[in-house]
Image (cartoon, rainbow, N blue to C red):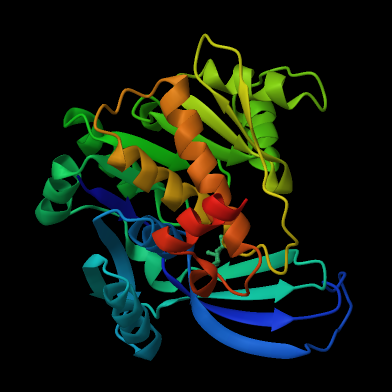
Length: 311
Ligand code: RIB
């Protein structure tokens, strides 16, 4: 069993502030640090720490941050299919406030050159059981990867973040679509002109599931709604924890969910299978929000199991 993640890697420059500055405002950081991040890298790390055998297709610069990200991913047990490119390694500027909320600006750098797939990358996707995608790298390679996976019956998990319109060609290849509430409303309203009752999350998840894939709507501390086309939505409740830093929590959820699906011997994506995977992923995300940073906050399989045994 194996999982391939295609996506971004960033060096996260994290500033802890009392509150996130408003436009025109300057605030002083109480603490600043640089850690590994990037949605693809976070999801690959979460899948690997959750027990999956992970290959990560990524573009890095020929620079010290690129070397450091590659070394950390390898140390996490990830097999890298990296390309070193002329642009510098991606950077994210992240402010985290006293409530654990964040605001992020990404300078994509090398990530924006991940535009096409080579033969080796396509073969790795075709040989995998699960492919995990996000939208922080160019859509052209995301679509190529989804098509390669679809042709080989590899399960495709798409985290539509940062949100953008999803072409029909991509949606047709996706088995599981993971979105937060903001992304779901944006997709529903702006891309697919779906009318939903304001505030009704079940309605929103059901409406999106009519696009084809199973939908997982993440609700932060309240958990997640799992919706399989044609069935009533199921709520996976959140875990009762105090959030210190929510950076990368959504990525932890996606990577852990992919690992849980990868472990299923019968990977039929029925409601029961997805709810079990979402329960595991919700626990992983709940552990991550109690720690600082993206990659440094992602729990191991042992930590996830321990949380289950004491809660
Ligand atoms: O989802 C969190 C991630 O978004 C951060 O690690 C940052 O690099 C940006 O990609």
